[in-house]
Length: 99
Image (tube, rainbow, N blue to C red; front, side, top):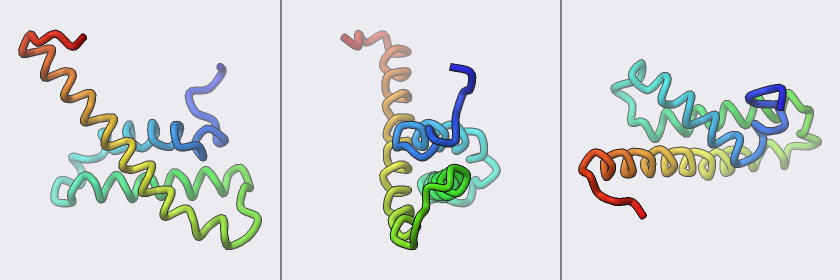
């Protein structure tokens, strides 16, 4: 693998979720007055739109129409993954066994 992300990877649920999670954690303090879930959705939408435009995937309007719905899935996935990491970290700090 020569790249951290490729344009094609950013148009998948896994790639877009990873990018959304990282970017959201990086910028969320800049948007402290806006709920993190909304910031995450906006980032997911931007990642999918830019990624799709970069690879030329959109053939007609139906492709673009579904992107806002896919952004919901990506945003919820990235938020859930980050919450899981926080729960594991909290359990580890309390000394609880995870497995």
